[in-house]
Amino acid sequence: MAVDLSQVSTIDTEPGELPATMAAWVIREDRQGEPRDAFQVEEIEVPEPGAFEVVVRVMAAGVNYNNVWAALGEPVGVWRYGDHPEHGHHIGGSDASGVVWKVGAGVTRWQPGDEVVVHCNQASYEDPEVHGLDPLAAPSQRIWGYETTWGSFAQFTKVQAQQLLPKPGALTWEESASYGLTYFTAYRMLMTRCDIQAGDRVLVWGAAGGLGVFATQLCRAAGAQCVGVVSSEEKGELVKQLGAVGYIARSEFAGMMRTGSETPEEEKARFKVMRAFDKRVRELLGEKPDIVFEHVGAATFPTSVFTVKPFGKVVICAGTTGFNLDFDVRYLWMKQKEIIGSHFANAYECTKANELIESGVIRPVLWRTLGFDGVAEAHQLMRDNQHLGKISILIGAGAEGQGRTADGPGAIVAEVGA
Image (cartoon, rainbow, N blue to C red; front, side, top):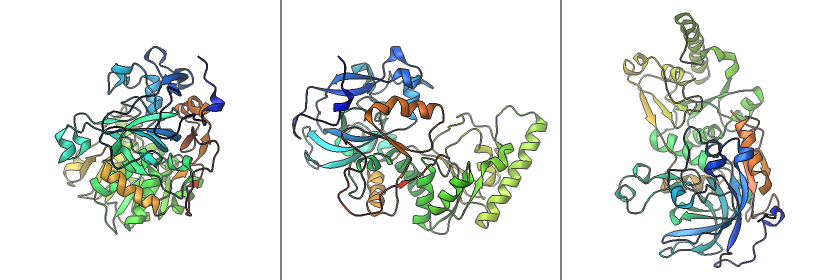
């Protein structure tokens, strides 16, 4: 049945009652490939909330690279994870703002009509790690909208009640949907895993990208100094606006990027450029950084380990240039440095981070907002590296600028991206 995309912002039921079906952008295993082909609009039955679950009417959704991976089926397909075997389809989307529409048994904190944002960590309430260690350590831990279906690229989504956070009043629907996955990840990396302190010095890779814009602001909020690595002078000026004491254009030091296949002569040349980069970092920060904020992986990790100070920390949450890391471990053990892995955030960390958004201390940075018909296009832009920052998708919201209920600074609209 054809879906009328012009009507997705219209709902025939009131909060508390679900319609029978909804429009959703769906990926199926037999059509994995380029996002423009893998994503297709289908009419799907609206899921009912189970115990401790909530169905949210999605007003806007945020776009992340994880659903480029879901479309491609690379590096691994999503089909054996979470509830995919049960349902056979994948509705992506790991960021959302919306309205609580129906609550399941046992939910007491949220009521139909509440305005919320959704964080993307799920785990079983029956896992003991959830009740005394950290949900990120639970065997059932999954990223909603990637390792599970019922993500945010649909008129309705089903989530665990613990995933909900109050929507910041000063933000529009599209602004509220733009920050969760990247910001909450950066928060855990710096605040929890590295215990960042006032006076710390921090090097941030990709400082104008989705993670970096929040890492930079968190450094400022914590009283730390940071230097950002960026791809252009314009993006450098943005990270200075966000609180960095300086920036480095990575093109000046392109020779330091590691491929893993260098000849001895090439490695010697690469090492020379890396030392020059280290010198520039020390000039800008006053000394070597206490913390290096990593997510680039294979190309930059040798430089991160070399550049961080003795007893310093390299914290990493991703490997966008590759996850097989090749570096000189002598600079790790002989200088007693630490490598710290980090993955998203738990509900408490998301709550504390969201309070900084509500107070205006941290601001989302948004590049573009598209209509519901733009989901496949947005992911293809990401796939082809044609985007310049965070993209939001309007779903229940009929137009940009809706949803603001309080005065405040709102998001920064900027052309950003590493």
